Image 1 (cartoon, helix red, strand yellow):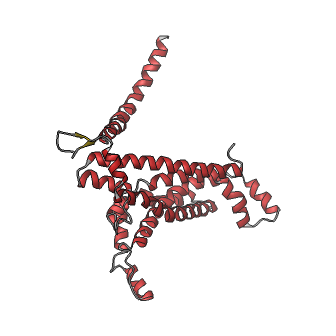
Image 2 (spheres, rainbow, N blue to C red):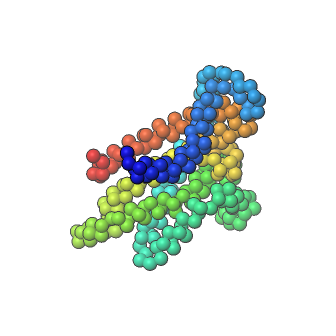
Image 3 (cartoon, rainbow, N blue to C red):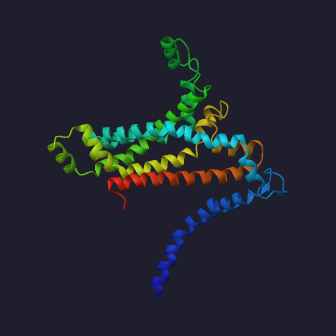
Length: 296
């Protein structure tokens, strides 16, 4: 190897080493440490760790709180996914319909995604509070104030809509990029054949959005298993564990009951659930893609 190639290789490693060090310190080491903790009973403080083998994993399978946490992502997903898909595609179509100021509109709709989850949760908590103007108006119409965060269904609904509001602008940018890549010739041909706007959307726009829909579905489904801020700030996992997510249970076991090993075992089950369900969603989306001619 020539001296020039050696210098090039050394320069490449010089640029890569900081990233590798960051990955090692903040991802690889915590991951290995977390896997090791699964087999121990430890309170995060004592220098002594008790080896319990598969005890933590077996206990988690019989824990009512863990099973509740396993169900909550699907409850939120059932409300969040339809809402965020309709909102984000609608926003993308709206922005794309403007010939000017598309960048400004895109930034405006993207801003909620940049907002702090804690700050947003506090605002939402104020909106659904008993004495808020919104509840006062609702009370005048229906005669009573809904217990938004005390009712199991309404609490899930509030959290789902809040997350959908935050992420619709982000997903809209993905759909906007896909919309702008659709050839205008397809719409012109459809117009010549007498197709209306709804038919063009269903037969041209929606199938052409498949790559974007695939990406958004994977991102959204994965996020559902990692929700923490919204239920922690709004409901604390209640009422009756109706909004008790995986991350809330991991946080509770690790830092409230000081059971680090047990929390690690729950984190493992969470990871397995994420990979399994994303695999199912991928298969479904790929089947649809093959029907549309996108997948081989």
